[in-house]
Length: 155
Image 1: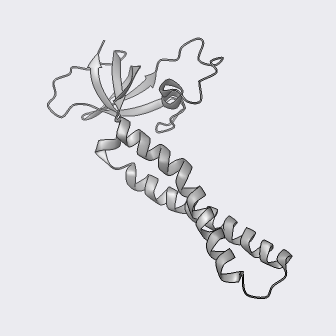
Image 2: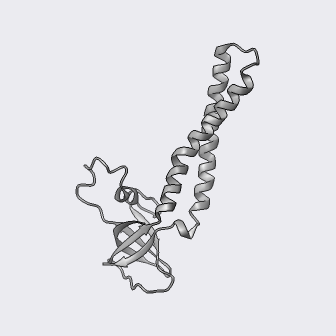
Image 3: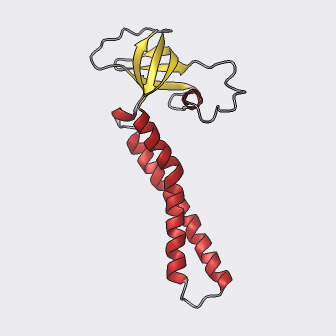
């Protein structure tokens, strides 16, 4: 589990809205793009930047009130799956489309320039198809409770 500290800004029946605690050095850190803190700070699930909806435990073992500091966690497996989808799927669909176009048009008697243009258009179309597929899957994954941030403790 990837964990971060956050401050509660709103409380609902089954979830809380939190604002991740920003470190003063976060803006100058060389690893800010790859750390969990930077990822949670850039989440746009709320109406303003930095707000994140985190689910409360179903057994009601935690008492959370406004302005409490809580620990939130994101399942590591879900984070890795989302990262793989984000980075690999559009590239794989682009390469697949380019490879298929090259295979089917290789013996068509076209000039090299015409064949390269068609393969380039197919690669761009494959990239676009991968991005559309990613959008569909991300909407589907956003409803999965196993991939949502959870409150794991109150500080």
